[in-house]
Image (cartoon, rainbow, N blue to C red; front, side, top):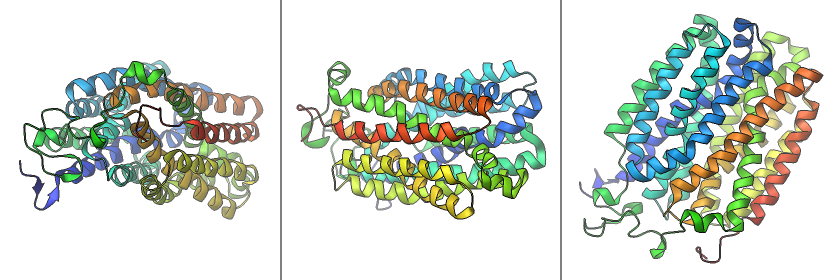
Length: 425
């Protein structure tokens, strides 16, 4: 394989493949549950806590699978892991469409969590980090736009499909789409590293001999820290805890934003049906705004200290939570959408960049896998905790206070996530 295909560095084809993969897998897996939540409550005659529990168990399985996914990525590469993950995820959604009891949802959450863990963020972030160094922020930002477009597309599509063919037909459709798109992309486009194709990161030419090691040319010869070295640093534990609190907050918003709108003064004004549509549309709009956040996050991360950029982005998320206290008009909802979209989008890009900068690529996939554990626990606690609070109080006021607190904690942790002394300057 030559350095470039048609004058374009092959790494950008990798970005495109990851973009589409995340567009489909995260669009369905991360951003449609809020739309399915109430139809599932009605179909199974279950409480919001029970139905949200299904999504939380899925998130727990996805997170606890990430250390294994990290090891598999290190051994087999993203091509095989993402391809297999797409097959498992698609099959799980097809099976969900045939479920008739609540316990079916919980059993299938194991397959769904494993498949999503293997086909979403960690494999694709690892892939991009190996293909780019100087342009890593830009490439990561472009790839992560796929997450935003996925939510923009699939949240309202889920609402439409549920209306037209029911929640079963919607799950069946999503399962078939994931299998048809993700697996072929993984096996026919994705390649493990630039060195495996005779390239260097960012498109500089390299010989096969130089490309034998995946780390032959990363970051001025600094390959990175081993896992044992990493876990002995203060920076690791700051980022570990940060991931817990960050996903606790964002998972609450993603899973409950439709319910939040329905329970607000705006929802009372608009009516339940209209409020549901407004809530589903809010997901699409804050994801649309997050595209700007992802681009700017990558841009500033290449030029400023990443931990300062990350702190500023979490401050935007805290401000968005404050706005939720007075959700009584479309204008207020618009302010929330802007602040939340910018903060959520930018932080999703800058966080893995900070991990790569602080610890290098030597054990990058394994470290991200470990970071998936607090990610998962935070998501489960956030979603179920918010649902339980709502069930007990029939209000989201306490949830809003929680959101402000967890995003403020994220700001502090980001500031203290300094690069280890033996890492890059």
